[in-house]
Image (cartoon, rainbow, N blue to C red):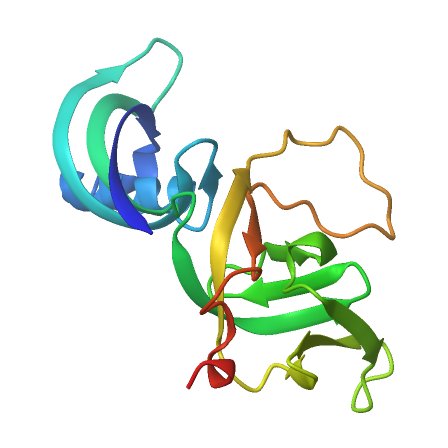
Length: 193
């Protein structure tokens, strides 16, 4: 779920940061550039782990900033396919579920990957949502958000940045995880204890 990724980046260090120790100034700039950002094929950046090397310090003509080539490692959130993760229910609709890890909310369980057979019914507590019910041995098991939900990572997508976005549309998500609940041991933890 978490891994280290080594990156080499050409960093422009503004003149107002030159009074700080070099490593501290570069660390602050790298954190501003990468923390809480998704890098395609690498995942969501959680933390700057360490700085491996700093080279350069060139000042180009007409520019008051110094430029460095920095090699560093980032702690990334990047689950692997088939990994089982526990999350909380964020939203429930007729198309499926949306789950959250607290720091990452773009986890979707589509209707087709819910336990079979399942059906949805209006949620008595929230009229804007539905409650999914798994039917097993003539008993109903609801997905109601009270417990953590275990899901298996089905796919990870890094959609390209849209050129335009409508005012009423959902915010752009640079990393989407599709999960599955259609296997033994998956779903709300209360189902299995």
